[in-house]
Image (cartoon, rainbow, N blue to C red; front, side, top):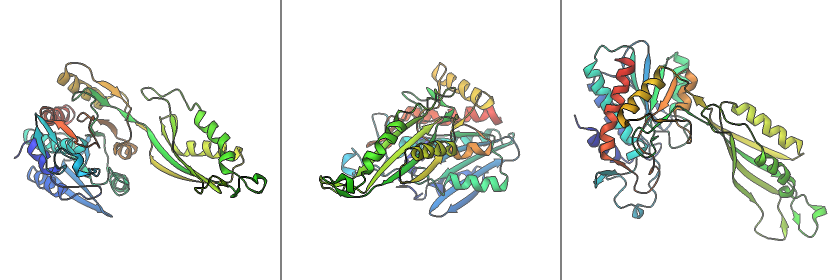
Length: 375
């Protein structure tokens, strides 16, 4: 069997721009089948998902990852072809090297090595992969989690291989993520000539006090290791292109990253009440990306802390920062979730990369953690 570098290169060479798996999961399934795993391919819409299990019963430990990548951008911006993996000066370059084909390759090697050493291990070791993490995330783990809920599939612990480290492998342990709620607000006015404001209704002027209150609001003081909830306006658009026309509509896009003090339903109600209080004529379209999750002190968190501390020689930072991950769909099933992966300095960038020595250390790190939980 090839090492983690060879397997990571084989995955990078498959141009699996979301939601196209481009043959990554069949490659990995073949290896897991050979190692004794049962594999179920879940094709949902245009998305490929792989559920591979070894053993039976509880506890159930899931290694969660994705085979899709973001588009590479202009090829001429890269030092080498983003889908032709290349090692230069001890660093592997290619789209997905850090996010997260390196981790996926390490998961598979760790799983192979663990079941070879512990064929009669306790509980169930599972690998769950999707090709819809970087895109809309509709028919990936979100959909699979609904199927699991219908089946009564239990998950006790989940390790996601997202690139969580900051400067060296293992220096950060992700123990939760904030929720994400996006909205598109359209405020209706009446278009007219700027010289005759009495015959028009300017939606920018009408919305300005509400937006000022919304953006100035102090939502909370944080939650345990979570930062305070934050609302950010990402786009404002109005106007016809002429400076002598009062626009007929204002469009505002905004996003909230929120901690467990809140859920999407309560935030939506608070913001709707604020807009109503200002007497606006508006429509509001919401997109719920996922609720926050938090893994409290327990078996999984303690085991991960010990394994990472042994690897780097000191306790890792334990954080809930960053964006979102597919663990947000697994946590509501009752699972405790953590994230451990490579350094995230180059993800989604030109010349995405991972250090080869850290990539080669990753399977052993995952295997030691699996052994702590199921050995």
